Image (cartoon, rainbow, N blue to C red; front, side, top):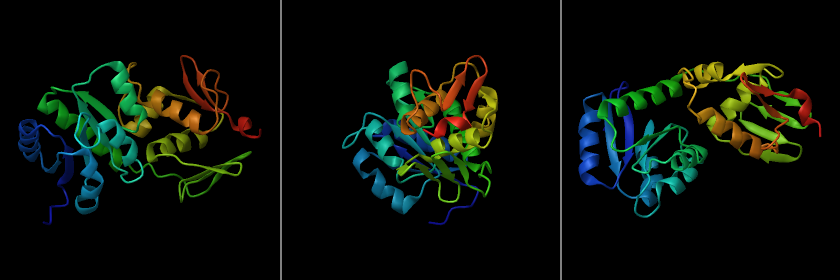
Length: 237
């Protein structure tokens, strides 16, 4: 089936049939085409045939739970992932974001709010935040924007698309403190509300992968009360 170009493709991974039908009916009224997958272990196969723009992902699924699936999707899907779950603790939400989700809503969620979250994620995905054409080099660290290849010494570092976007933003303005408000506007197209931890979580993942200290980071520094700073001199050792 050929869809109009303006129609967004949504893959809803939800085993609650009644809830899935309600979401499908509501999203259809907002110019979205939705397909439903009810098992976590069949999602990767569905990606090949459907090619969604966004994935709405439940956590408690048969076959493969949403947390495990979210981690696997980083290698197969470059679009946004919105986790939806009745698991609403801070620990659950942080875990989901650390595993690669772009947003997390706690069920039950108001349909209008769900649509607003989806539109926000799709707007962010469409932003032309493409890196400059030249490579960046800092001591043992090299960043190639063409292939999104990161090398630290002789080791290639695998980053998700979102982690690469953050690294490139920080590194392209090395030595400058970038406020959370600036980062949120540039990468997420939203204002920083003082509570959201998406960028903090993404920064933490970057530090782990790039050999930075979690307790006393010296490569991607936290400047308290201001934001983050990429230290260009910290990549020589």
